[in-house]
Length: 227
Length: 227
DNA sequence: TCAAAAAATGACCGTTAGTCAAAATCATGG
DNA sequence: CCATGATTTTGACTAACGGTCATTTTTTGA
Image: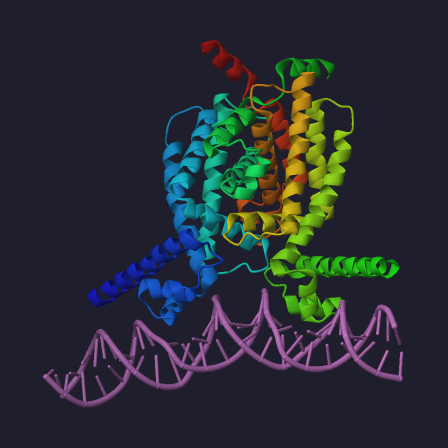
């Protein structure tokens, strides 16, 4: 069964190569403007061959998402291995996420595409979609885990379900990332009224915000007295 | 010029009718699966007529976005008219947004579509895109205004640029909304690990979170002493 | 009533995702 | 090393969709 193994490895390598090519192309021209013919050509393959590796365009792009989320999770997992207060872990998870997207913006596109699929009626079944889902769940678990650690070590308030809090932090992080990345567009500059806020700055302040809140301490204590 | 006016009004009405039809269709089947042929048929028009009202599919969907953001802004504007502490205004803006999306989920789809356009290389020029942009800017201004009021009346800390804070709150709100709305999908339930968190609950806790923070008060003061 | 102007139409075009019969390549036994 | 059957690759083809425009229908105004 030596042959079988080599064959399988070659096939795997080809699959990865197609994903490589697709990543480059969507970086260059976006998902919408990348055609299967072009991917095939740039990969040095016939179009039909693409469909031997991926059931369709959607699945191919899901594979990019899968690869990206797996890479990200490897980084996030390392953070959780550190012995730090929960709230610091949360901050580090956030910084890791933003750094990852900064280094690999193509995966931000891929993640957004994945989200848009879940929303639309085009959701794809199949192994790759499953793995994307598992990866998303894993990332979510890292956040929840950090929150639980924080609630246990006393660095984080424990008056909200950590899973709900995790969902909030995760969703908010993505939204802010989105905001930061849209700033590149000429349009968006108008909203920013000429001021440039980097993803790092936005994210840093967001971490502060969810950490200590935005309410003025005086107002806060005044309110607490009322209750 | 009586004729001219009637003509113009009739044309306007037809335009609105097309948007009505498109809204229904994308509610039913999503943007991707809605075809121009189908919109034309359901509107009782020839396909070519659609293109007399909208330059293309993108512009038509942008018109839905424009309509939705205009409706939303009317509601947000009313909040700002109230004489309340800034931090309460922020909370009310958030509640209004979530209520609006709950009542008109189709506009959430339209807003997301608009965002995805800004991201991609397919951005459309033209009057409708301009108006969408203006509306987005207006919504942003309401948030910033509320923050400024809060910083002035002492209900909100003033250690961050209100425009940056506004961007953060806006982005985070959208992200959480996204999270809440994706929960409908069968997939997403897995991440939630069987627990259902309503958009209201997520949003309510988010408001608390950015209001008072998630850090435990003891940990917080301990940290402040260190500095 | 009619002709010119304006508006509406749907057959048609180009593009692209996806298919599949045929061609090319590979594996195996003699 | 060849022959033949199995496997893999391919690109011409199809269907579907967004968008166009010559033609038809409707409206206008004298």
